[in-house]
Image (cartoon, rainbow, N blue to C red; front, side, top):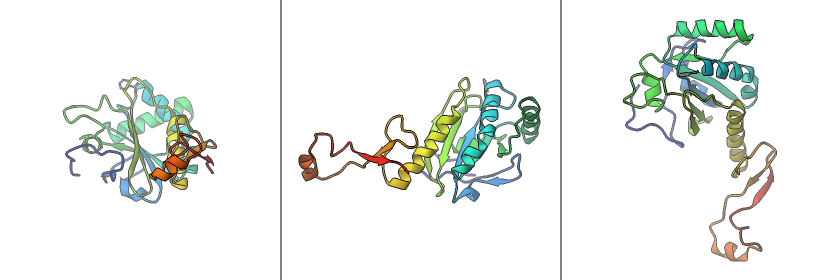
Length: 210
Ligand code: BEZ
């Protein structure tokens, strides 16, 4: 896998890769046609990561209903992943069935900018990439090792991206499904002067998102 000069940004094609995972070999580009949430975690058998995996496994159907696959990644070996998943099943009663990739050389983590090029381990990594059905990175989040991600916020990001795509519209602050979206602002000076209200040419609701 080529190492990019700079980490990918929103709007870039996600770097393709093949890897071993807990459900067999995976290839990122095999998910074209569906949404994909690719996320890294610092290490198996750590407290915050364990809570994230339990929460994500419990919400796996909510991602599936949105046409979205989940794919996790860490530096740990496949056998560490297996042992951790068995422990999670026994302790919390949930089976993590989405793939967890092993990335012992950090080659994938580096291609995605999940670790700083100078880092010798993946201890600082809690990155999430929201990849659309065309393989384009549409949103990314990065949390520190000591703060777990919000699964409702991950679902809200997906809902927001899918809603703005469906309507060609914009999602305002604190948007949730069912809330109005915003129209794209105009680029026409006559519309600016003709608008009845001073903000109406650039800040206008479209009605509830479907
Ligand atoms: C955790 O998931 O709890 C964790 C991972 C790496 C460093 C510190 C905490």
